[in-house]
Image 1 (cartoon, rainbow, N blue to C red):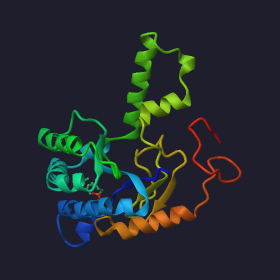
Image 2: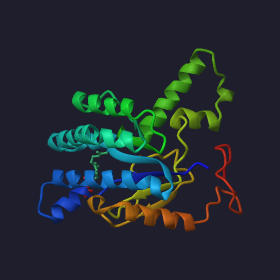
Image 3: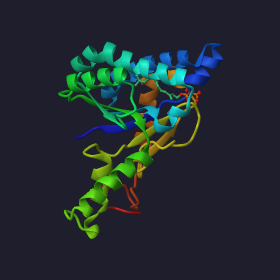
Amino acid sequence: MSGLHVGIIMDGNGRWARAQGRPRWRGHLAGVDSVRDVVRGAPEIGITTLTLYAFSSDNWKRPPGEVGRLFWLLREYCQRERNELVESGVRVTHVGRRDRIPQSALAELDRTLKATARGHRLHLQLAIDYGSRWALTEAARAISRHVASGDLRPEEISLDLLDRAVAGEVPNPDLIVRTAGEQRLSDFLLWESAYAELYFTDALWPDFRREDLALAVSEFQRRERRFGAVTAPAEAPQPTVVG
Ligand code: FPP
C-alpha cells in the first residue's frame, strides 16, 4: 500500500528570528534543522512523499541579501546532507523553475538529485522557485503544443491528462501542513490539493519537529475524507471524480 503524501508550507522563520532579536536569516538557518528532522522522521509515520515549499516564485520579491542566503542554505543542505539522504533511501526531486536558481545552488541540487535517484523509502520533493499558477501555465503550454502539432484533439484533454501534465506521476497530496498560524495556500500545489486535508499550526517552522508532523498526521487520520461522495470510499478516487 502506498503511504501518505504530505506537503509543508514552512512559514515563520522571520518571526522566530525576530523573537530572538536575531537577523531574519538566522531563522532560515534554524529552519534547516527542522527540515533535517522532518525528513528523518517522515518515513516512520507512514509518509512516502514529502513536498517542502522551500522558495516560492514570489520569494524573489525579498531583499537580494535574504534571497542569496536562502540559496546558500539550499546549497549547504544539499552538500552536507547528500550522503545521509542516500544512505537513508531518500530520493530528492525538484519541482519549479530551474532557470533562475543561482548556478552554485543548482549544481549542488543536481548532484543531490542524481546521487539519490535510487532512493525508495521517501520521495522528498523540493519546491524551489515554484508556484502552482506557473506550473499550471507550463502544463497549458505543453498541452497546447500537442494540440498545435496535431497529436492531440482539444476534446481529448481530460482531467486525467491535465493532472499528469501538472503533477506527473507524483500522487496528489493527502495533507497540507502550514506553520506559523497563517491559513492560506500561497500558490502551493493548488491543483493537486483539490481534496487534500489542510492542517494549520501556530508553531513557527524553526520550532517544528517530527513530533509535530506526527501530530498533524494523526489528526489527518481521524478526519473523514469523502472526495465529494456521501460515505468515505476505501481509497482515493482517480482524478475523474468531481463533486
Ligand atoms: C518562510 O518564512 C520560509 C521561507 C520563505 C524559506 C524556507 C526555507 C528554509 C526552511 C531553509 C532552506 C530549505 C531547505 C529545503 C534546505 P518567512 O521568512 O516568510 O517567515 P515570516 O513570515 O515569519 O517572516
